[in-house]
Length: 526
Length: 100
Image (cartoon, rainbow over all chains, first blue to last red; front, top):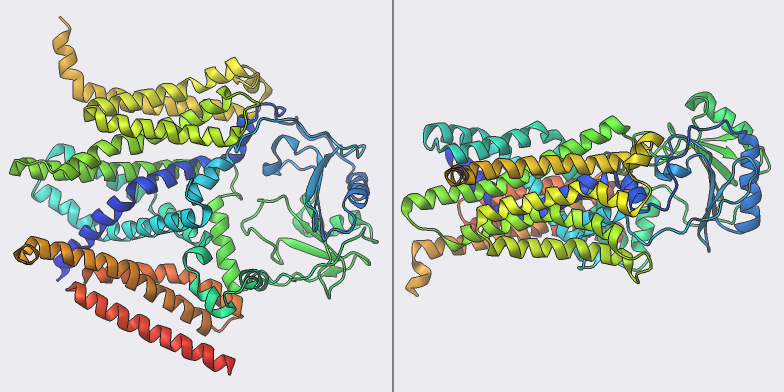
């Protein structure tokens, strides 16, 4: 019975993962890129300035007064005002971290950057039309060309198969291991298995976390029944659910300038949060409550993604008295912790790189799994003397689906630099570029001899990534010669990552070439 | 007819049937259990619903394991339909009771 259980789990692992493998590779690879989507967006808009120099001290009381003046003038009658004080840790504001920013929501929605010393509005830059790093976020979570709803559900189904793959993988791991040493010590197959297992085990907790939190991300979309039963299916039902879940008031009154001084509230909040920690201030007026001011650290500074009594201070705007922030319920707490872990926004650079590394290990685990599927079946059928077309098809599709996607990503960056800035629908064309090159690579993999195709597509991808910094230097003045001396870690990091990726893929291509064609090469040289 | 009765073909049909049972019956059961959790967890409504959905994913995994492990596709279909039916009825009764 126990052996039979392992067997059925191995079957499930093999076929469940085969079905979802290429899609999971796409989701993992693009998801890995999204770790640095903010930096990617900056790189893709080279019109933006270099990273701001170290913060100069700002008189925050003056800055706050400027912000309120601006909001009173431009956002009167809106239901929410946001103020972002200059702060080094506003990662999402990037090179604008040294500026004061205001935003508003209600009938209108808008935002503006202000000089924190004078309150003068900083004019918006004309930048090229691009989705930037957000493109990876979207493709990774809802695919493309399918509509958002269907895309999200397909991604969720793949994620569920991925989770199933992890569980069944752990169950069969030991038995497979024994099988190998006992029955089939074919070296090629065993090394693929070892690679697959090492990658899978090394970052197993990360994989479980990232896939489960990914499912939680769009829980209502992929499992709609609970909300439908509890709230009905009428138009406002989903909105009612989220309002209740987040303890939010449904109705908000227009906000106005607080009577009590904001700086005193900042100082009071910072007695707990630490001096200079307040980064974001929000003014709202929920129906039935006083006009209130909320103070938080810069967005992404702490683990929970949304307001909790530990991370947010609320004040009565009229008196400056401290109000209590209601504790969140367990459902939303689980959700927020999962979303925060998934996004990794709380992470500082070292941890972000660990996310990237784990993500790449995930890609490697999936890719080796797909190759292993082929190698194993080929071995088995070679002994019987047949070669089923299904195995050959997967073998050939692997080239384009895996290596070809990398080439497509490189094409996306190339398109960003090469498409004319004034092109109609430019942002969409960058993404079409990714898919077009990917498709060509898939077809190429189907037509060429398999081993040649692997070496060629990998080499081409290495070349395409390796030339990105050069292309960048030829088309912009945001290249390594400028970004490195200026100490702009984000932009320089992008170009250097391209080179690192090129080296990695180049090394893979070179090794395969030597292994498969090495003998032929030696024979040809006299 | 003999084509459908060969052991190979029968195996294929049984696998296809199990895949359908996992996708449809398994999803129905996970979904019904998530609904039940949303109704039964002793929390505020929205919190229970949210937890129900997020735990629902975790329930779906063992359901899938069982579907592919149990002896026959017919058994998988039978139990999945029985349990989803029971969970749905219970949910319906709970909703009706709270509405009355």
